[in-house]
Length: 206
Image 1 (cartoon, rainbow, N blue to C red):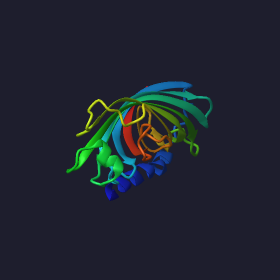
Image 2 (image 1 turned 90 degrees about the vertical axis):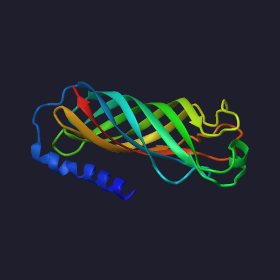
Image 3 (image 1 turned 180 degrees about the vertical axis):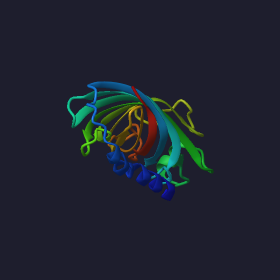
Image 4 (image 1 turned 120 degrees about the vertical axis):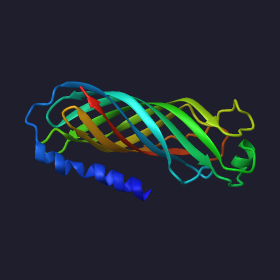
């Protein structure tokens, strides 16, 4: 976790460097691009481990720059999340899983955020981002479920995002925090589960 925080702090220290290279060129109204990176995630809930897992996120985006100060950025991302299930002898664990060892849950999501971009300082290279996100569960696998066809996660998840985007002439880098608001557990499960994640990514903007 210390290495994660160190890397995120490094990302967030880049605005000072970027301000030394202010580009006077007016930002184009429409831009698009692709990106990929690391999804550092966990599922919050009694049945799941508190440790973060490392997975990936890939996607594309569009930028609509309405002025020198703000714009909108819708995205479509494919993201994979994993989390270890604890050996807690709760009713939930006993009802759903075979006893014994640690087991993992893997979830594949299609995530659609709509972010507001706010330019920081005189440069248009540093953007503060925030907005809502809808996540559609494409598939899930939980090791040692008593019924392999059973679904214990809801198909949709609503969350909020916030982060920083460094927009260089062609390359961009950034970091975000994702906080899930939806209870992910299906009806009948007596626990509440929520997504939590950090995204660190880089890509190309055209």
